Image (spheres, one colour):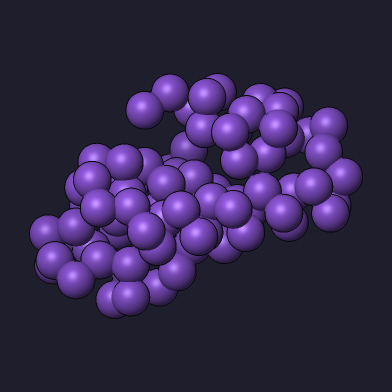
Length: 83
């Protein structure tokens, strides 16, 4: 999954800083809907990571029924906190 492709697909631009608040909110909504429908494990995790960065990720217990996925998401959050 290419980040620039996902940003362009959901937000219409790979430069999130250039988006209006409305365009950003619309993109988050599109990404959230697609996340809910996605069944591919890796794509779903990548979408959750992007939603987390944008402050819109669902809670881990809702997003990931598998405990291993929840732990991977916690590891991702810890890495972001350390950066």
